[in-house]
Length: 232
Ligand code: CTP
Ligand code: MG
Image 1 (tube, rainbow, N blue to C red):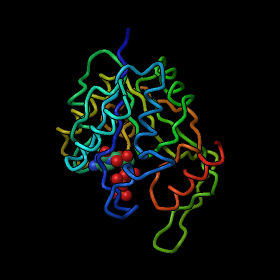
Image 2 (cartoon, rainbow, N blue to C red; image 1 turned 30 degrees about the vertical axis):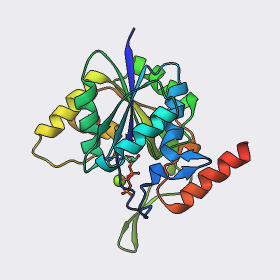
Image 3 (tube, rainbow, N blue to C red; image 1 turned 90 degrees about the vertical axis):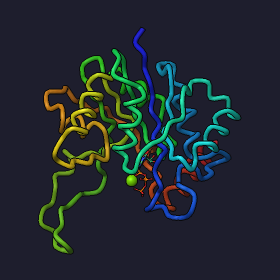
Image 4 (cartoon, rainbow, N blue to C red; image 1 turned 90 degrees about the horizontal axis):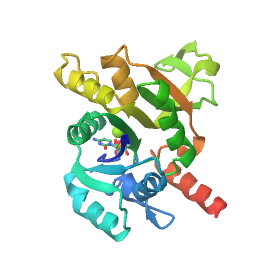
């Protein structure tokens, strides 16, 4: 059986969200945002193990929440780094590059669906790296200051989300290459890291759900709460 490990990135400080408590630890419908993500991967039959990545400051409280919630698939709570890529690196150093699959998910996307998790893994049959994407609903333009310099073709644009799924060896190769690289390419997602450092990797996308938006600002938390309330 192929081992499938989900990595939950929860080591950010939530600068754009603001406040003292990072957004992934704020309450959403009765539990912290990251615990919603954790529950989704716990429920997904294809996921064998979950590694949670946090900052030093929140490690103990996260451990307590995991113990209290009886999240049995969590094998470890490890320390992340200064940037998201640093946190990915810490997780890959921990998980290794054994023959298996690695999923990476932003803990700040609490409404990830079971369908998306399973679609990502199914797509790995024909790819090394899979990104969840969502169609752009607004037209997107390029600007230079306040000047519009280009109107992009909405039909070919996608929002990149997580989860992203990988053959573990390919992601490990990208992470190792990025650590050794001269350029300071600091990807804010992991499929882009693979594309940059392992150019011959086979990459594909699966259509995700707009409900898996990332909690970034205050209004996003209100949207997520309203969605959950409407679905009750
Ligand atoms: N993340 C992480 N380690 C970091 C930075 C981010 O594990 N050093 C995680 C966040 O906790 C989040 C996900 O990566 O679940 C996506 O990052 P983002 O939305 O940018 O979160 P923050 O970096 O915390 O927010 P901001 O950029 O506003 O500071
Ligand atoms: Mg960030």
